[in-house]
Image (cartoon, rainbow, N blue to C red; front, top):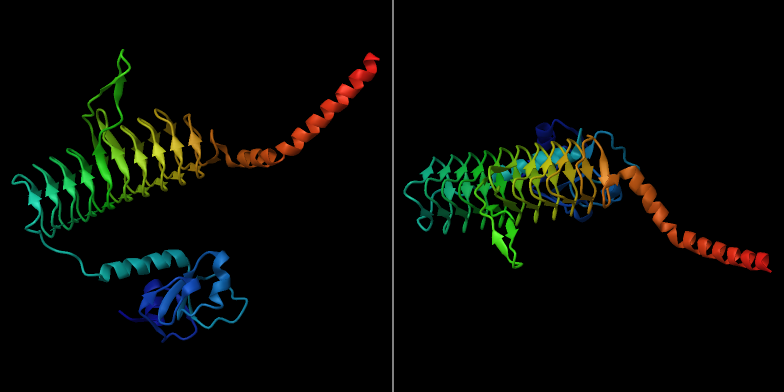
Length: 348
């Protein structure tokens, strides 16, 4: 589809600077823009490219003031990144949507499937499963017995949902994610072997949650592992048994949360953050990449880094001090030599 700069500005409630009639039919990165495409500038680090980009239209913030001549038409908006998100959603909605239930899917006779559900070939729907309207299930998906899935949920290829799990409305489960696999529970025996502890709980995922590809969320030993509404989980994240994630918390790839830990609302975990088991994390805390959290954090609205994680300002001071360690070591060695010389003189 093709849209003029003015049409896009009207949709975004923005202002056109330049040729309002120029048309675009695709999107591009600002550093690799080509004619007929729309791009955006939200990060000042990329400003250099706006003066050379071949893209026809560029979304910019209202506060942006060019330092050189720009050939592209600008659309000024309150938030260029958010406006791009709105456009991407519009593009997504215009794509053809899959429909129907494939004859190559297995659906148990006791399963309940509402209207406008898409079920792809080679999917498995277990006994007493319930799937609400306008949900899409892609190929090679396994949905176990008694699983309940809400409306407008998308389950991509190869997802496995174990029995008794509950998935809310408008949830996205990306390819290969596993929901409800056994928690890591083993009892040591006298002979050094391990006895498996049955995991009889489930996983509850509330509305508007997105789970990345190949993420794994373990079922509870008893009760439920709970992912509250609005949570965003990146690829390759592992949540252990009985974990609870508060509303609108986001975590990047390769985070690991040990069993029975509770994380508050609106927290942010950067890549490879590790959190120990049986602790509580207060609301609105931020953890930098590769941080390790061994103990509960009761204060809110803090930023932490390092292992063990400490407040970011203290972490920076420690990091600077570490860089000076070789110099400090040399000074200590010199002082020791001087002390030895003084001792020898005193002894004489």
